[in-house]
Amino acid sequence: MMLGKGKMYWYAAAIAPVAQPDAVEGRKKELERMYQDWFPAIPELIAATDEANILTTHLYDRPPTQPWSQQNVTLLGDAAHPMLPTMGQGACTALEDASVVAKCLKQQPDPITAFQRYESLRFPRIKAIVEQSLQSGKMGELNNPLAVGLRNTFIKAMGSAISNSFKSLHAYRA
Image 1 (cartoon, rainbow, N blue to C red):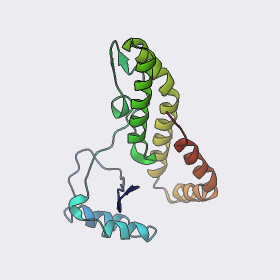
Image 2: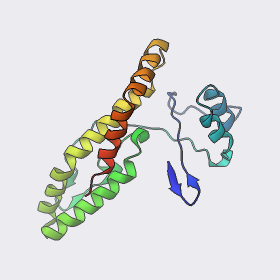
Image 3: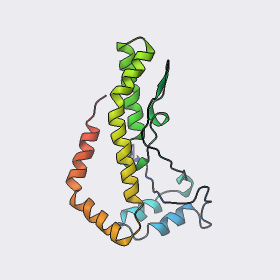
């Protein structure tokens, strides 16, 4: 993901036991080994990254749930709806939440009513994004060669539909 000013971030995910220590060879070498047979840009990206900038984080997910609010307190972003990074929407949805909750508070000075409105406006979109992130994550976990081949063929065949899906996702205005 391009961040601007010549900077980007990237992530890689792998299924691992809880609290698995770093590989003896180091994070960078482990990633280079894991992704050596991928499209050439991937190993190049890993090679160009300083090992000190490679962080290990455990990923957790859960289906979208409600409520996010209780009386005059509400949650937004990952606190309300944690999601896997597979679609790159975590920070985006947090910013959308902030915009919507601000508009709701401006329209309705009673925080309880405003937060209920915020949640009702946001939940359908958030539910769809979280579920898409979960599905995308599951597709990435496939390791059966036949299943991986079918997934890759499907993604290639559906490229324009997937691209259009992201365009509509990014066209949203809070």
